Image (cartoon, rainbow, N blue to C red; front, side, top):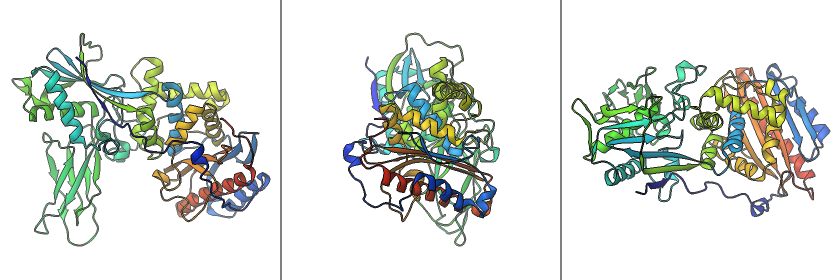
Length: 511
């Protein structure tokens, strides 16, 4: 019996990097500067401003000859925010390999249905599904899976078992802000995930202009009741949101709804593996499949696999695959935290053959840093999570820059890393560098937490020559938060100008 294979995303979202792309070179250059001037120019932009009160680690260098363009406290380890994703995604490419693909599988074991996860953060992600050919919705995906089970699975299903043991069941990092755990960017992390582990609510005003607003929710979860404490208003701001207590899938709709909108309000779910199994079971039952037995039917007939449970003779029914390159793009260009957390746990599992955890994933990254960059870099790097949501992470600009250079030494790894990073106008850089012209290609990862900003990446000339840069700022006074963002962009534009003047007829570095 051959399993149905559903490819989660076979379309490369970004154009392949090639000499043709490099040929699209703009002749405009920012003011030409020499390396020794960059240090002074960057210093002048900070000196005498409120930015001088912040902690700052930064470095930019030309890997082709080791020239340092500027350096400020390069070994000072600071909170990196989402710049941590550069370590996580680079480690994933090194450990898993560019050709790796996540798999979410449905098996039949006698009269039981098994939902077997590999930690794929993209399973049922509406953004990824929409890029499929043809585009899919979460309901389309579930319909395909239900069809495969009904065609190839048992006629009577005793239970649905979710095998999420590729990861541990610590769904939330202990250092994440407790007051934000219901928000999409703090979504729980499981060995089986679905729809980025959130519910999306689309509210609309009550027809009579007052009272409880109407809403639709995606994906549909008819076994969950929602407490609607929101209200319809005709004046004021739209403040609709959803509350959820910790460790429960109980949801309360709150705030004011003034108008309908395409933008959803998202709330994180609890226990993604069990929730995903319940979602599958509900759709199977709705399609007429017999699930469970007396007193335990439908979503009640779903459980997680026991830690030592074995399933002999399981037969694959359907497989959903997501290439690593698509996961990296969501991780870096879109800066989706769930993706980074799934990656850090997945590399922990890959190396230890144990359930992936934040601890063993962090140990793998530290080991790679020590092996590739040296023990000094590893000793001053603290890794708590994969996304940078934790304020316990610490990394220096020197380590980030050295890591980016290490990534660039392998042509394939470098190519996939560049493809995963945002360029101006894309992802988290969609509003960055506006109104500017650059001579080279900028690939970067931004980072932001309260009082923290980061911007690190590559400036790459048409001939392949590059400058690697890393900047992290902590303890930023609230009065200059926006100024810190503009400052980092201006520094990258200085690098662009320096490279534009120097890159002519220079050999490429790293292939």
